[in-house]
Image (cartoon, rainbow, N blue to C red; front, side):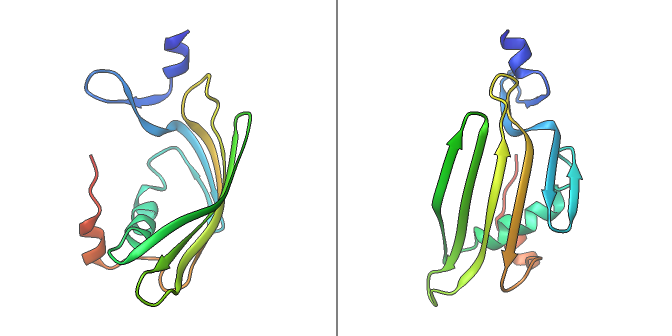
Length: 127
């Protein structure tokens, strides 16, 4: 049963899952669908660099759970100007008995840029 729950997840050095998404993730965004966990990585890296930049704060004013579904709204605020940098809403279907998120649908609005500068990308670390 545990093996069934972990099937499809990326694993770390000791065989434990360390990724939130399943390998067969379907990720719907306003610019199209991404299939698998690698297709969206470059684009998502820019999004994380923008919302995780120094001087920005994230908030999740609405988060709802129903069975395997998680739905939430989020926003990112510039700490100095109080300007909204980005906002969105997201729906995940997690399938806990299979492990990880296998469907994610998201609406993203970036008010300044959609692609981050090389300097911000350097601040994002990956393992």
